[in-house]
Amino acid sequence: MNVMSKKSEVQGRSAPAVRGYHHYAYKCKDPAATRAFYEDLLGLPLTHVVEEHDVKTTTGDVVSFAHFFFELSDGSMIAFFDLGDGRASQADPDTPAFVNHLALSVDGEDELQDMKQRLEGAGHDVVGPMDHDDFVRSIYFWDPNGIRMEFAYSIETPDQKARAAAEAHQMFERWRTKTSPAVQK
Image (cartoon, rainbow, N blue to C red; front, side, top):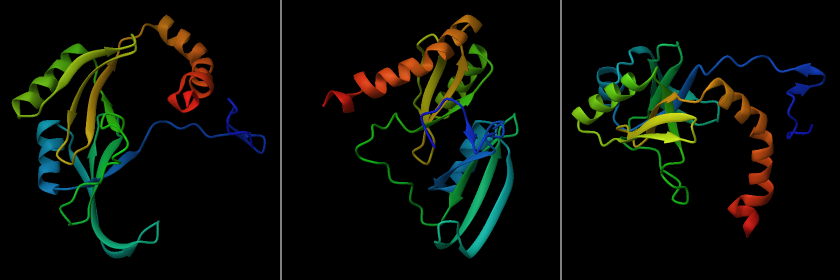
């Protein structure tokens, strides 16, 4: 199978449509601080908790955990695993801290500014707003687990969106084969 193919087909069948994400899960350091941050500060309700004890996981580990979910307005969720060890996930020391982050969508500038004020009012440092390539306007901050977070909304016009989509594969290949630091070595 050619993984570089533009078309998603396996054995002559198109892939089913992916409608969005159900949830994205992270490790939790402090469940009380995590709940307060996501539910009280960001307004995402806690909607489900799974508690397991000495269960064999999908990776073969046997652990006890609580898995809790906060729901976004579109029905998708951000979830956390509390292993009861009080430790955050370890970042890769060779990856810059800005790279791995979760970007959540807001409707526009008023909502972006409201979130910025809420975060700063609760003592969180916020970077931005900043515009990225006439594509998105964002603010950045850290959650209590050390997860880099972003609130963003699209600022591109329909023409800009169409042009970017038309050029995306060409730009991707240019980066991959010519301009990436990995190629420059």
